[in-house]
Image (cartoon, rainbow, N blue to C red; front, side, top):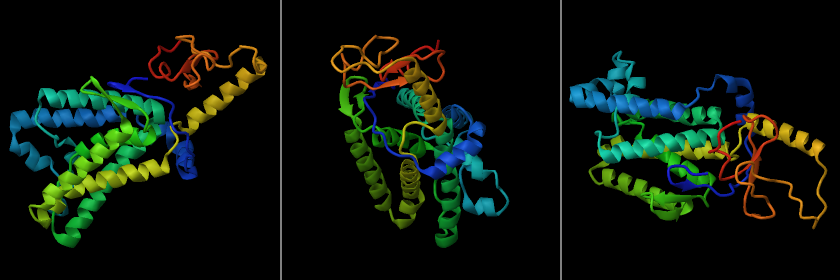
Length: 296
């Protein structure tokens, strides 16, 4: 499995909280697919508007608790369009990687969980922004930048042994990238605080809130498979086992075989094999082709 230079190995299998499974059973069908693309598209729209209208766009779109209390309630949502930066080559490369990463994480966790992550962060930002203004009188700066970039931390926390090709060249484990991102975030907060507590609160709060949203999400959803994916796999594995008997030890007969490359657990014991719920029949794929194959 490759995600914009990522090579995903065997993931950690951890238990999922019951409350999230119950929510998915009840509201999973209402989840918005490709949610990452929507928030990235909103960021791009904001960047285009910034080029054409400049500071006027930021003035009417950005989060302002004082303006919201005076009736400009659209700012509770419109700050999502505030761009993280001007359009440049690096910005477009950053967006491309996030687009690819978001699609892969959604196929990995399910649409419902990605909806929980984004809308949970969105709601947390709004509530915290209003509370901070009520207590301190400071209106904090809000953009989707740190919520989006925290998806790299999400990947690293869920799959610490995954490899990322830094600048598409240098291989590095995601567990080390997690440390790098935490250090970068801490440095950003320190830099903002060095200009005074009001500036630190206005801009540093965005980083802290994004990390809180991420850690709560990881705690509530540690398993890479959604409830529906688990049910599909259990059903398909039961069907497969009912059709084929277990091979005798030492017989050289494999139990798992990738439909694409033909590798088995005997030839490559380090691989993980999974069934695809979108393909017809009992088609099994290795971890390198599970998310990249064409459904048949």
